[in-house]
Image (tube, rainbow, N blue to C red; front, side, top):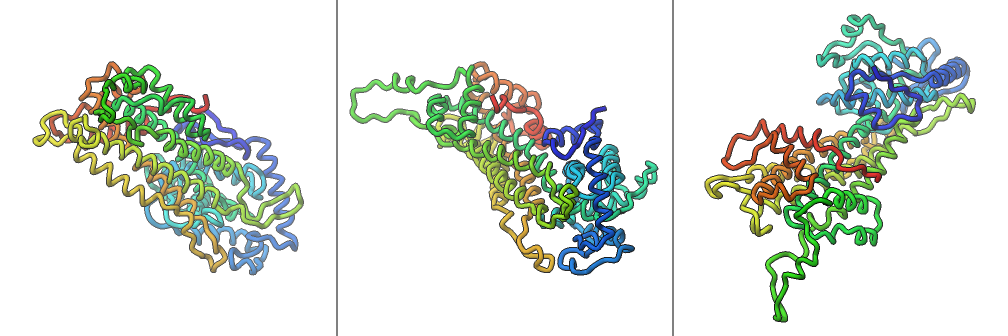
Length: 522
């Protein structure tokens, strides 16, 4: 059994991914974290019984904050908050994202500025470690006073209500807790607010998406290298010197990876080889090949470089967020005060996810355009129509698959529009500028899903090109590995055949198989 110790300061996206993927992983708040939680709780209990006006403790919420609540009703207030906001609708958010959100929120509570009890900390640990995952509908929060609606469904389960996914079955929370002999949590001062007034859902989703995005970018680079080989690309477009003249970190990094991947290829060309073949005394001659290849081959570092940079920036922002205090009010027991503000506003995550998904849509477009290049014999002027390896006219090759790549890319182009600008005032105009952070993250998840489909089709296309050229032995070791692994699950298409089950296997392979080509940081 492995333990992830949470102290509110050192959680990273790799930790979240590991815990979500490995059911033997357990979380535990550190002793230092528990000490701060106790101090915060003590401070809140003392002040909450006094004459101070503390939002969400002895007042109503939102526009009803001017209503002062009697001491005897403060616990009821927290229960009412959770029940009234657990009203999400639509499809359930994938359980892995909900689990990631629970981890992120527990880590933030462990910082000791939320005023919650140690018993609530332990209850969240228990839910996570037993993988009791609340059902959370996708439609709800606007991402400004935190992910209120989505997180309220998590809080609802903690108090023993609603439904959960447990051992792959949807069940009533109360039935699961009774079976496991677990008591529902009784909310205390501010605890309902502390559970839902946060950006944990959007940042939890973002954490997992960043790991998928890294995999996607790595695959895109490897496919770019294979495409470059099939067209006997000129190596000067990847030269270190050329890219150092335009020193963007991402561009330089992608070019370096491509050079590494192609180092043992026998198919790339030095530009001098083109010059040597030109032997004419004519003043103007036309040569039978492109002096400069299409941008989807020649400009891979320039196109994917911004995606690399965007991912690096987003990772920093997400890791700040999952280790941040996003409560309102903040129980600043060290400063002997309650800080009323807006740290729950989700625009950092929303803007980052918008930028990320736009970059990944561009990555998808790059892949689809390369697929089109190789399938259109009038454009590439070399390969058979639609990579048809049998009898063009009678057999159709990859013609049908191209429609899938085109339509899927078109859908993602629509998703690329920045959703965080879709601010609609709500909550009695109290929340007058909102982030839509969780919605942006869920849209980004769809963009990633689409991208893997499009890249899977490109891989199938390029593998057909390898077969047409019979060039397996001349490929770089990276491309040969990619080709060989694909062919283990997806034979070359010669005669038309049913592909449905095999296509699903290829998508699964590109999502999980190729891995990162090299260490980006070297």
